[in-house]
Length: 286
Image (cartoon, rainbow, N blue to C red; front, side):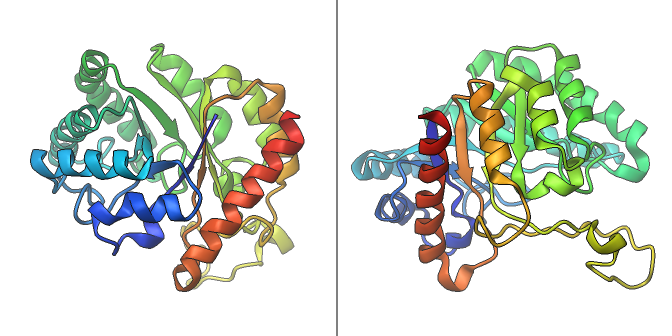
């Protein structure tokens, strides 16, 4: 099992200094999420081959590995120009991942929930182009249902991944999205079984609580998706039931600390999360 840090709260730290910082915080692995000098949100990667090799050297020097690269592209967009651009960005990101010596990528379904059928069609079109590239490079892909994607429900996401019918494509469970996925972590993980290869760990409040009035947004009826990425224990996710089911399923993938809420105390938060993850692993895998 790998325990990784998503260093998004440290995105202003220069890329080549990131491995040393991650090691200082007690992690041996990085999930390389979007950052402006590497793989920006929804845009073509910004890193060149020379910097990729320099980054590899810094990783080796710090004793830190990249568990996965996480790009976010509009590859399920109902807009065909956006979809085609996203496929081009994906191809470069896959090449960079391979050059880093990394064999796993994580991402989201994307698309638009109000145009779910069209988005699904675009997703399949993109996958037809990209799956051979993943196969050629020997890189796996874990997908998560995300709030405001064309698939938000956890059970539906597992079924979609099964329908892809590729040993390279698996399921990522994101704990802070628990209440958008159906608030059924044990059921979703049981349904996924060995398809679950990665888990994002952070806490969140149940936005459906108090008869749906826990968060009041204007205008009434807004389709905004509210959730947080808090330290474990600051929200309402049941981490004992989550880890219990992971252990029962024989999970041996990557656990990622994915807290984004506390940039003003990012180091303290990251160290706390490492200790809490170790505590849950020890409790449920002993």
